[in-house]
Picture 1 (cartoon, helix red, strand yellow):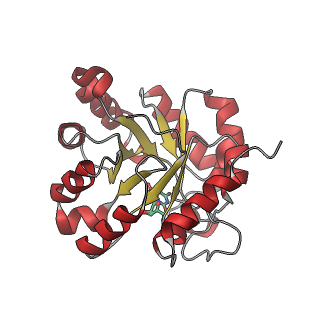
Picture 2 (cartoon, rainbow, N blue to C red):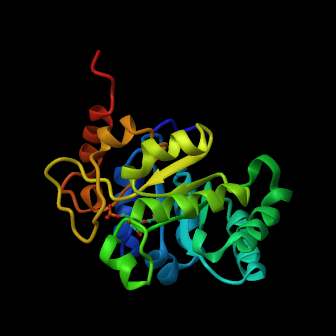
Length: 235
Ligand SMILES: O=C(O)c1cc(=O)[nH]c(=O)n1[C@@H]1O[C@H](COP(=O)(O)O)[C@@H](O)[C@H]1O
């Protein structure tokens, strides 16, 4: 199956039935789904199997950050689940990312995309300062993206605000996956570095992660289609 949509819907629910009910309202050809820490911790691999049975391609967003051996085993487990994409924290360092990359080599063309989280989109300058980091979020994200690329990873999770610069610096093939996407009129919530869907596409983003603006919408499929239409060329 090949999905051309750039939208990844973040399925963050504390109830499996509600999550599956939402998935059942959405066309698996119109988007991919992201399963993160909340759902995976509550429901485990069963949620992955249930969504695969519904033909969705899945981004398993567990942001692994541990010693190299543990992360290599964790991404292997993700590959065995058959997910489309998996991520680690670039802050885990080069040896950790290289071990993860190496662990997936035996999967060949069926290996999930392996990408690294740079600076979380919920973090701003004061959060970095609190960690003792004086770089701006963009500067720090660029350093981590560079480390991810030199460790052999296929892309990064970053803010869409970094996309133009990152595409120039890291090349067309290096995937940019951007949360913090907010259609005009939707609530910012805890996100800090945000952008609208069309601005993100114009900035060169490959995949945009959108959660609450779709999952909390009264009509999720309509909202998704509205976002997809907003991305169509107007000429
Ligand atoms: O890795 C992620 O997906 C991620 C990285 C990041 O920097 N910021 C971020 O918001 N996310 C995830 O993207 C989703 C965003 O959801 P909404 O804020 O509801 O659109 C959540 O599931 C977050 O865990």
